[in-house]
Image (tube, rainbow, N blue to C red; front, side, top):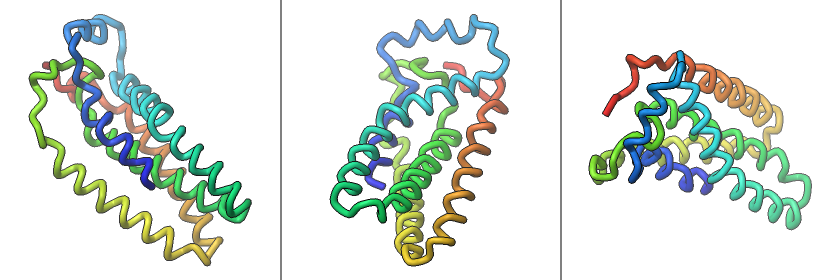
Length: 166
C-alpha cells in the first residue's frame, strides 16, 4: 500500500510543464474523447511509479514468506490500482503538460491527499481483517477488478466540454 504514495504527486502535477504551450497539439488532433489521453497518462503513471515498487516488494515477500503471500500481494495490487485510477478519474481535468508551473497553487490538493490516506487506510485495514478469509479476499479482488475496469472505461465519457482549457 505504500506504493500509492509514489503516484499521488504525479497525478496531481501531470498537467504542469515548462513547455506547456506545446499542448496545442492535443487540441489540433482529431480526438473525439480526450479522456482516452488521460486514461493513457494514468496507465503510464501506474507503469512508471507503482508497478516497479510493487514488483520489488512482491519479489522480496515471495522470497521470504513464500507463495502463501501471493493472494495478499495480488489484492494489495488491485487495491492500489483501484485507488490510483479512481483518484486519476476524479482529479484529472486538464490535458497532460498543458499548464505552466506558475499556475500551480501550493496545497491545492491537500484535501485529496487526506481523502486518499483515509481510503488507503480503509482498504488496508479491510485487507488485514480478511486475511484469514480467503473466499472473502477473492470476492473483494474480483469486485476490485470490476471497479478498475469500470473506472477505466468511464474515461471515454470525458468530453472536450468537460476539460479545463487554460
